[in-house]
Image (cartoon, rainbow, N blue to C red; front, side, top):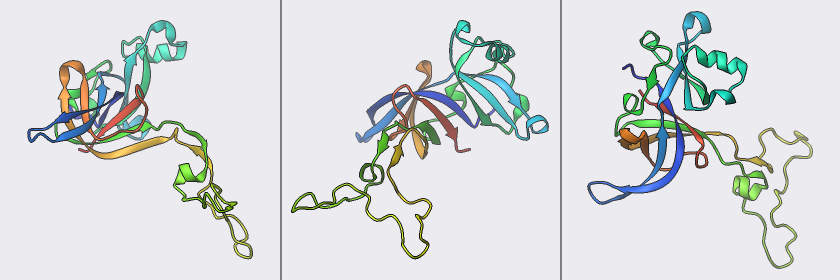
Length: 210
């Protein structure tokens, strides 16, 4: 089986495991794969080599006509999630092929994991950026406001990128260099040291470092 650059998974939650020295290791539990190859993209046709994979099957009745035609090419009914992964050996993949956890990762590997962070709505500068704020007592009239945001004479405008109140979370976050602690192949379960972005049941993209 060729080495794929990544695999899709679902964040189950967090727990802890103990190593041979009795040290407690916080881990994130991820249900990964199997993923099905839906499409092959080549340099000649698309400008890069990649495979498109589907994760978490869904009923054919829940798939619209254009999607059904696309999934039919790989002999699949439908998937909730479809993503691409770059590969260096495109000719070794076939449509409909199953990609399993053990074929992509090994215990001790370093991985990058991407997920969509929890959305926290519109927040002020204290929660969003960690501003200290003003005094809470002695007649202070300045508590949680951002304070001065611009200059008067020059440049006479608010500089781009100024930390301001606004939408917090609900963006794509990548956590790098996480260690694979354990692989439970029979249950398609991956244990990764530390926290990963996103809420429970959220889609996770796991990228290998090789």
